[in-house]
Structures are given as structure tokens and as C-alpha cells.
Length: 417
Ligand code: EPZ
Image (cartoon, rainbow, N blue to C red; front, side):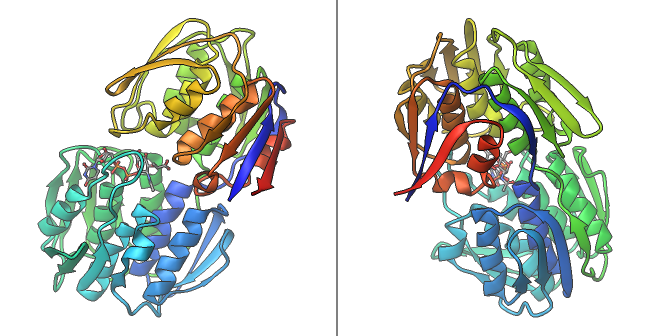
């Protein structure tokens, strides 16, 4: 297994270009099940999760060319309506194929995704929504078995805001008979990207990006060409990399409007952020102020930036309180950050971070995707050497992060173990 070795203390400077969004690419790939024919998806990041999604679609019968940048997905040949445990367990977003397979074939059998490091992550709201659309759902031997002659439109009100649930039901409802209304829908930008693809395919979806989405079912969808939105979490991670190293970095190809909550908090902490025609400049202050954050569904502070922001607060002036309100176990980076000499105490879903003068490099272990990013950020700021093991977590969601950071002057290398 590879590890990253970082010699901290370098101020980052220069320009970095953001890759396409992982969390927009995954549902967009799945949506091609609904549009038999050759779909051309551009700006796709080279990531492990993209490769896993490709494997899932190929196991269903799709023919796929490429695994990053431009990916051609010919979904005409999809004939298998079963997604097996060995594939779904490696990436829970694969469960999204259930609705599209059900809509296309009238039946589907998909493994339950199981939990993951950050939480139980049930899919009860996905299944409840599919039942509302008329699906017969049975859970047997760890699989979801679903049947429906033709899905019928319904009003669905989500108990809680769910990104995957909203994406799943938007796709299932696109070719259902009649109108579907999704209330208390998630508002993340990735949902709007997916809705744009579905509408290009011929769907009639309005309100994506708001908490009420209206879908008029159509009979069929056709294949498209589309370029995926930039990855806002990768962009946010590089903004914090500039801030935590005392750097001055220009970030190209990001959409700052996708990160308002993070940008406001970074500015409160004293970071100078200016943006002009798709270039965002991030200039670190001499001293960072401690700021409290609460993670919330979009447009609130993103849970996927919580670990990275905590690393920043470890070297800020004063104490900050960070509360994680989306996932029940998303503080696994805390014990690793303590190894750098950080001062963090947790109680339930709240962490109190007391800024320290300097972090000191240490051997640490990645536990999940965004936790890995927070360890890199701490390593960049710490003095002497940091070694991060189990970075396969990182490769799920960050394209060539060590090359991009080295391009900004970081002393970082990937060592094959
Ligand atoms: C998506 O996960 C993202 N993944 C996550 O990013 C992100 O953290 C999350 O949204 C929240 O923004 C992808 O888009 C592939 P949810 P998702 O359904 O859809 C509970 C990353 O680092 N819930 O919005 O699985 C759930 O347990 C990943 O890139 C139910 O209870 O998240 C959680 O507490 C990590 N029942 C909350 O809702 C359900 O049926 C939000 O989950 C569904 C969800």
C-alpha cells in the first residue's frame, strides 16, 4: 500500500486547476442506464470511485471507453438488472443503480451498501421513495429486490435532507407515469448537475437546487454529451491548504458560488479571498482567528469540509467549536490530528479545538476520504516529516493530489510500500 511523505513548513504559492466533481460524476454515470446509447461524459476526474462505478456499469452490460477526462458510456447493451455485493460494498453510491434499473427493466436486485467508516448511512429514505412510486420492495439476504411494471409519479416528502436519496428518486421519477414532487429535497450543486443531464436526455425536471423538485415523467430518454461541474470539495481543500501554510494560491476552474459557507468562514478566520472570472485567489493571514462551525445540508457548511477545517483550526489563535450534524461518526481524524500535537477534545458530535503554535510531523493513518485530506493539511503546516499510510482512502476522491500540491511548492512524495 502507498504512503505519502511530507516535509512541512513550505508556504504554498502558484496556480492549481480543480478537477471534475466526484460526487456529480457518480450519479451522472448511473443516469446513463436510463438513456440507452452512447453517452459522452467530459471533465471526469481520474479516481478510484470512478473506476468502481465503471465496473458496476460494465457488470450490468454497458460498454465503456476511458476512465477519466472524457468517458464514453454505451448503455444500450445493459441487460443485467443485478448489482452484486462485491461491487456495491466498495462504494455505497452504487446503490443508486436500483431506481434506474427498476425504471428500465421493471425489476432490479441490488446489494444493500452496508455502513462505512463515517456512519451507518442507511438507504431507508431511498426505498421509501421508490415504494411511493409504486415499487414492490423486498429485502433478502442483504439484497434489495424491487419490482414495478411502471413507476407512477407521487408526492414524496423526505424526513431529512438526503443527497443520494434526492438523486435516486429524481432518476427513478424521470420516466415514471405522471408528476412526482420531491419535498424537502437536498439542494447540493451536484443535484442540479444531475438534473441538467437528465433534462438534456429529455426529462422534464424543475426546481433542482431548491427544496422542492417537480418531475413530469416522460416515456424515454436519449443519450447525451455533458461536461461535469468542478469538484467543490477538492477546491475547498486547496483553499485550506493555502490558508494553513501561510500561502498565496490561485485556484483555477472552481465555482466559488458553490462554497459560500466555507468562504465566509475562512474570511471570518482572516483569510483573504478574491475571485475574478473563475480564478479564486486565497491569501493566508499572518495569524488565523478561531471560528466555530456547524455542518449543515447545502447551502450550510459542508460536512465534507469539516475535517479539513478542523486541521486549520488546530493552528488558529484561540479555541473553536466544531459540530458535526450530518454523520454520526465523522471525527476519526481527531485521534490522528492529536498525534501532530493538536489540542482537541470531543464530546458527542462536538469537538473543541484549541489552536497551538506549531504542529509537529508524525506517522499517521488515513481512516476515510476527507480525514486523509485533513492529515495532509496538518502535515503541510507541521514542522519536520509526516508519513500518511492507507492513502487508498485518499485516491477515492482526490485526483493526483500530491502532484498538484508539489506544483504549489509542497515537499510531498508518494512512496510505494
Ligand atoms: C453524499 O452522500 C456524498 N456522497 C457525501 O460525500 C456527503 O458527505 C453527503 O452526501 C452529505 O453531503 C456522494 O455524493 C457520492 P446523504 P449521501 O444521503 O448521499 C442519512 C464524500 O466525502 N440518511 O445526504 O450518502 C445519512 O445517514 C462523501 O465525498 C438516512 O438516514 O449522504 C446521513 O446521516 C462522504 N437515510 C444523512 O442522511 C437515507 O435513506 C445525509 O446523508 C439516506 C440518508
